Length: 209
Image (cartoon, rainbow, N blue to C red):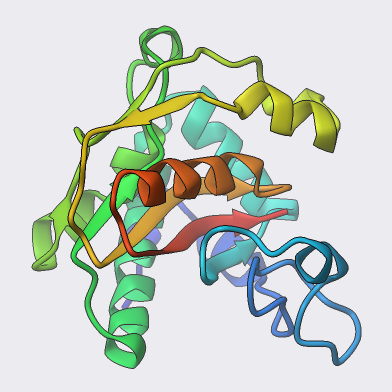
């Protein structure tokens, strides 16, 4: 299937990369034949497994920034179709999820940006897949600083307590975000979901830094 009509040229599509050998827990790129990265061996994340479509570098990083900060929703449309393909691949191998929970934005960030980019990434999944996109059970209760400028320990402290959740009785949920660097946000989201009654969480991200 070709997606060039969504304003992502063939050259950019071909330049998007995805490292083959990744940590089986957090999807961090691994250079050796190890199955898990040092961070996950030291302290396993609260989510069970992470899936990613791309490396967050080169053309991918540029396209994501255009999508998030320059209102280039046609780029988001391209990624949304790719996200749908990845979702189908995951459930064909590991089974269906009870719900998908996108990472919620704070009201302040949503007002600044005008849209939640993760909701845009799930637009095709919501349209074509038989799965609940739960946008209400988990809320952002803390407007955090931009985590990209913070060190790991600072990120963990900043994101701590950023979410609240209503009771949920899902067995398996898929948590979704656009980019993951350290995993602090997704781990906190998983922590919140598990405390609310979810039995297990996997995560799906567009790009892994």
